[in-house]
Length: 460
Ligand code: BES
Ligand code: MN
Image 1 (cartoon, rainbow, N blue to C red):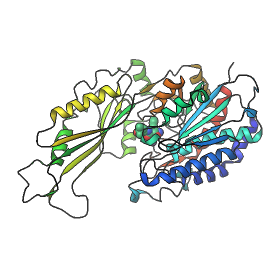
Image 2: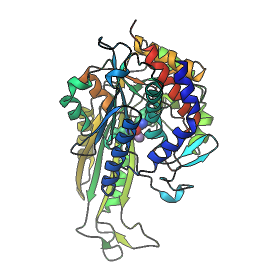
Image 3: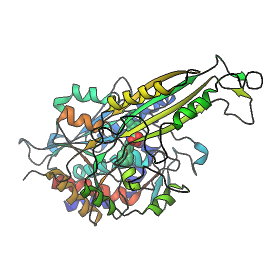
Image 4: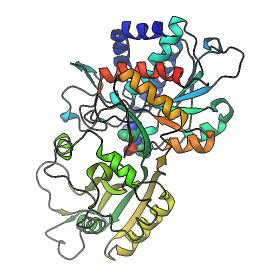
């Protein structure tokens, strides 16, 4: 094992250079003009996996390809004997980098400053799963036998809802069968607090469009005699949340499982104060559902969020029109026991009920997934906690997080496997924001955690 750890230590500079190469590929899954870049990125990744000694292939789908890479049978300690098999899941697609003018340096030209590496996709998620690849490289290149088989599944559609991965899992159920899935695509509260995340929120996405006049109209000639779709949409949306930060859709909270007293106590132990959170996100004052702490609000309570709001003229200066339409992109975060289809129906029914007769409403459904909750006391979880502690040199925390990784539900449903969420991201990493970064200490500790994890997960 010392050989593996020494190898990691010796090769950090090269690993960072390789990560930079990976980050240069603009794999923005949401934007059709980047389709080729996703294919190139998958190709680069499969080739890199091959170079470090894995059996790798690029699997086409109806969307962006999936990269599958496995440790060769010869790498295993228990040759010929049945041995545990773990999947490492990650995603090589990234969020759109816009708004570009807020980046200190271009999003796909990685920059290192101190112990941070800046580029779109550093923390979410290229840097995080790359740490696992470097750990397995260390085993393979030092000839250290692995205590288990590993299969890397790195997809290209996580940021757009993983539409094609579930089908792929079903199709390759036998090959991908595993004892557990290891996912580093979440966060940790500070560099001194490595974390095992045991819950994620679910999600439903949709777009509301309100249509008014058949075309943009002169607001002086016609304004005053017709409803303004932008105003109608604003008034509609304003009715969906009350003064106390509660979602005002009838039935929305019906299936929400309340937090236990024990969990609420654990939340209080996490090392981030409300003041720090306020400063980190740059708001004048925090706001959330009354009766819950910000930590609870952002990880264990459901929300209704406007992600985008568009209508009328967006260019320079003024243009006096009544716009023909107005649109809002919405997501709701869900918590355990809320059913995505059911919540979607309640939201749509209510919107239709309160839509004024002066506009036509269209609701387009997007992706959806239920929340995830897994036992933090299973033997696998305990093994992960030991690996985290040994790698980071500090005691790990257990936490719930507010983001969503829809596919973990399918890992459970299709493969019967729980996911171990061992995130390496920091709260100030700027995931989905301008100037995304990844901490190089998290990168290196993450590699060590991965290397140690396979030892800790070894069957007794
Ligand atoms: N890595 C995130 C999910 C995440 C972030 C979980 C922080 C926990 C803490 C992932 O890449 C992501 O952004 N997922 C999307 C899913 C959506 C597009 C279906 C999300 O949460 O918005
Ligand atoms: Mn993301």
